[in-house]
Image (cartoon, chains in turn blue, purple):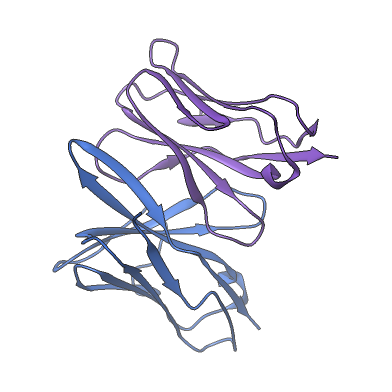
Length: 117
Length: 110
């Protein structure tokens, strides 16, 4: 089945530094990938839509200069949290929809737990 | 009103029980309905996927969609302790971003 790989699975960084998270679709091409954030005991909230070959689309309230998204190829999207602060500590998850036969399914990466100290 | 409503639980059932998880939604444009299982500190895992109204069965899991009532359900038969997780419903109108419920935490006890 389709697999989406996300790396790293967890990271601890100092306040003020930047962290890059990678999301790869392993056996299908994804022109679009989605980045979600999940705070404890809350549901997934969409942060941005990553589009291969064009700029990402950010949801209201998400700072595009803080959360840099690059979708360099049909199988790779990256999210960089710049100048991270403790309030950015969260669980970040990417997903990639696989579209075929008129249907769509979304597959998720394993998630990245970011802790900013 | 949220687009997708889901009872957060927690829901505690004994091993072997039938579990019923539900979501309601307000957006009539939703056509694709999914259920995800999420274990603690892990990413969501796709369990069931349904297009439009109807039932779909996969092993111990059955997904139902009633578009006229804007109501979807996930049934788990013969529940096991390994089914203990948070179950998230999700839906979308097109091949696009998903709208999630808040998730229901399920605990299956021995």
